[in-house]
Structure formats: structure tokens, C-alpha cells
Length: 348
Image (tube, rainbow, N blue to C red; front, side):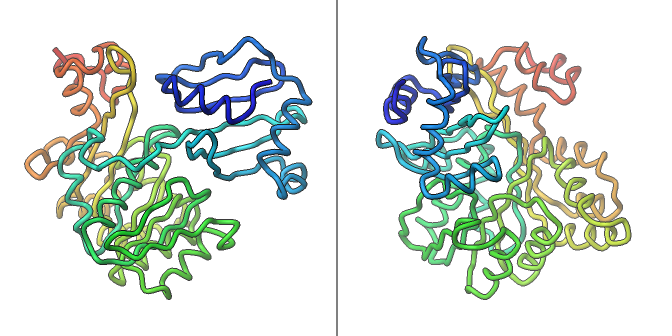
């Protein structure tokens, strides 16, 4: 069987984003969003257990007991995110290749108004999208832009740590959940005593983490976080629904005062190979604050659609721009659209 070093070297050379190792199948990678074989040799159960022991190291017994392991390491000169898991009693691996360097924010194809988010002093900025939509890369680019521009203190809470920042103008502390702190919520509570200007939360997935993030924003911190949601309105609903019904009105009120922007991403197959970034950007205005407070999230999409003057755009508007610039096909735009009729009418 090929070694992890060899697999990563091949995947990197061929522009793949992920590697999958599964019992009974050849090693596979994801290239341009599609799963493909890397070589004809089939993984055996022994191969899978050997890979798990190598990657989990001292944590192998814990992995064997609980069935999952998350980590990060460098292979073939490329930093990788590791996720081991059991299926039918045998280890499988999903390994994400991370970029060798953090890309500049203005090279990602994001709406220009995203550049303004790094100059904020307080509030909550959400970067959302499905797994593999580039959220981690965008957040890293945002943090690195702050790092090279402002004299601030950045504290990150990650699971695992993916990109390693090289402090420039900022002081930076990167904390790994499960290693440096017990949980996102515990690390976030502690961060409020660590004199941060900027806090990055790898995932806002429970009530305590969300409550503390809102408190941090209310007390003058700039908080960046992620959610696995497909639009700005979905993100607001997801946050509110984490709370019991009796607390939801209060959370809507607090969220309306602290939320600054929601950036939602999708990666679409690009004409000629690779993938193009389609991004929705909601910049919170007074009108949107009123909609959040009233729980009228279905109307938020309309407010975003008419916010071009301040740099906002919907996902469908982003898809139309990509079709018009010949970056993606009209068929793919329709496949990824929220409102296919709008895209059909405007993507010429």
C-alpha cells in the first residue's frame, strides 16, 4: 500500500482536496469535487488499522474506544486535517489537504465588501456553508488580513487547528479543543479573560457557545464563527432554534444588535476544471435588524437582494455573475440555485 506521505504527495501534485481510505476499496481522492481512484491497489482491513495506528499515535486506544479521532499534521510538506472513524468495525480515513500558505483575502473571489469586515471593532461575523465549501480558508484569510494590518490580540478556538498563523502585527493564540481546552464553550468563556480583540470560534454548535459568543460581541469583541447553513436567514433560524422557546425572543433581540454580517459559500465546478466560489453576503442593516427581532426571517432574502449599494448579494445573484463571466455553466448555476427561475431568467 502507498504510504500517507506518498498519497498526500500525489494528491497535492494532481490538485486534489481530500483523500479517502476505506476497507475493500482503492485509495480515493476528491478532485474538482468528484471522487476518483488514486491507484488500482485495494485497501485491506490490516492496511486500514495500520493507517489508524500511525495517524492516531498515542490517542489510538481512545479512537478504538470512541470510534472517531480528529487531528492535523504535515505530510509531504503539506498540512492536513485528519478525521479517522470506524465503519463496520474497521477504520476509515477522511484527510483534507490544506493550502501550503494562507491565501490573500482579495484572491478568493469573495464580494469586495468582505474586505471591510476585517476593520470592524466588535460584533459577530458568520461564515457559513456545507462541509468543503471553503469556510476554513476564508476565515484563515480574514484572520491573516487582520494579522498583517492591525495591532490586535487574536484568540482562536479550533478543532483541530488547521492553518498555522505567523504573527506579524498581531499577538495570536491558537487553542485546540480537546487538547488546549475542554470544549468550544469552555475555551470561549476563558477567552473573555485573555484580553482579546478578535475571537475565532471554529464551530458555533451549542447553546452555551452561542450565548457566550453573543456576550463577547456585546462586550466589545469582534467574533468570527462558522455554521453549516446555506443562507443568512437559515443561519439566524439555526441560532435561534438552539434555544428553548421561552428564550428565543431575547436571543433574536441580542442577535439583531450584535450580528454584523453573514457570508455563505458554495464551490461550483468551473468551466475548464477547478471550482469557482459563489458567495452570498448579508450586511446587517436597520431593516434586517427589525426582521431578525420580529422573527420574520423569510423576508431577509429580499432585503439582501436589494442591498447591492452597500455590497450585499444573494447566492442566486452570485451564481448569475459567475455564468455571465463564463466561470460556470448555466446548468450548474441552476443546480446550485435557491431560486432556479430567477437564475434561469437572468443567467444569459
